[in-house]
Length: 145
Image (cartoon, rainbow, N blue to C red; front, side):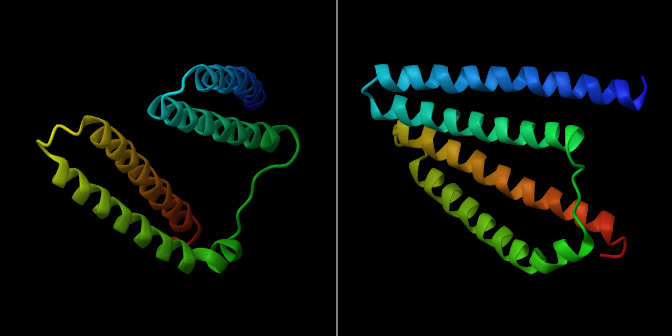
């Protein structure tokens, strides 16, 4: 497969995927309107917000192929890296807090609270992973970092 064919395939996939994300936003919106239960509404809002962000990321991928390539210079990374490292420590503290709260709930039959805390733990770990993998980009820029 040529580079051009690969790019066309990725573009088609992203654009089709965006349609699915749009359907997800619409679907979750319908559930939110129909339900009066705050737990159901919250879960649907979480999914809806994630779908909106996925759509945005997909659009960045599309734009990087159709309009302007993505770039990140060592200087740009260097300007904010210390702040990113501090934020990574904040994320780690949040994971500790959620793990502590989950430990307190163990065996207490507070299933809704445990469900929501598990969501938070997964999300905080996702943030930690996102920033840690961002560090891999930095290492690729600075082979001796």
